[in-house]
Image (cartoon, rainbow over all chains, first blue to last red):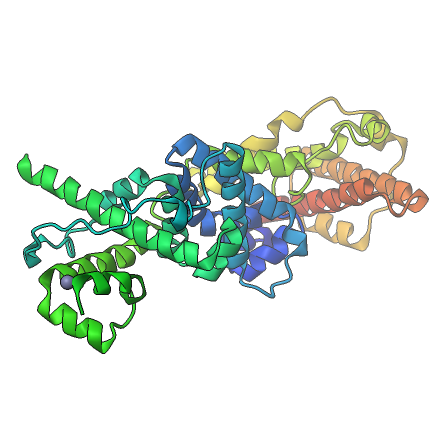
Length: 200
Length: 221
Ligand SMILES: [Zn+2]
């Protein structure tokens, strides 16, 4: 077996792939893409609800990353670096399309979305345990855009409020309150969804 | 604590620890405890949505194409030729330096025909891709024959048992690769900072290496 074939057959670690991608190695780029494509694409899809846009944004995010890979020095985790870049690409596109990404400030908004709807609350009305991925995904897609951004960044992607505030350009308090409203709205959507299912 | 008071501090409570007062309210109020359970559940289930879906293969294809056209991919795949960059050099050479590889791959293809079980997907791809490169060849190699290095001679001796026609083909492929390398080196002597030519030279070395490996690999079967 030749060296070239050995190299193709062996799995590259991420660090090796980064170094080889810096040298222009096609296979290394593919390794990095495969490692991260699902997370980046899912993020784009949740934010845009459109597979074509999500694929465009995924492509753009990876291209931006690969163009800058020579400057990656490994101080931060590669996935963190990549993911921040993807978020920026998505947010920039949403801004270009004039979609609301910065949540409307609490003070400008009525109580309608924020308050808890008092329902006859027997404990068995709980959602807990009945949320599957597809139902939740559908509900997230139905969220108003401003809520959705914060919810996806915090609860799905795991960013902290201070990071989100910086990325999105809002206050930390705003991020917190929008997240809470998003969760409440999701609960409502999931309950409606379940009630409809039950009726069928 | 009333339900209203509980709700006011609820955001801090989700995915966190309720205060003793909140806990007391939760113990006595099924509405609020149900709400908190739901919100906690939503927050934790949301993590399932990360990396839930996969982009279509078209996305990578588009990325790869762009990386090639921008010159970011330079290695490990057949050949990247930014033809517009240096017309004179490329005109002089056309596809001449691709020929060794094309020839070597043709040999592999023949061997694989006789040993079809050895043909895996990667090999199949290698065989197919550069076929187009058997393009018109200028007489570049005819103008001079660079001396064979020690390595070249060693390589030729490992394939010495091949039929004479094949051997002659290897030799001419090798001469062409060497001539190309020499030409690129000359250009680089004139302009050591010529990034394009550096890349051409790197490519040429790799292609030559491939020629070595492919042919030697066959003989070990
Ligand atoms: Zn209560």
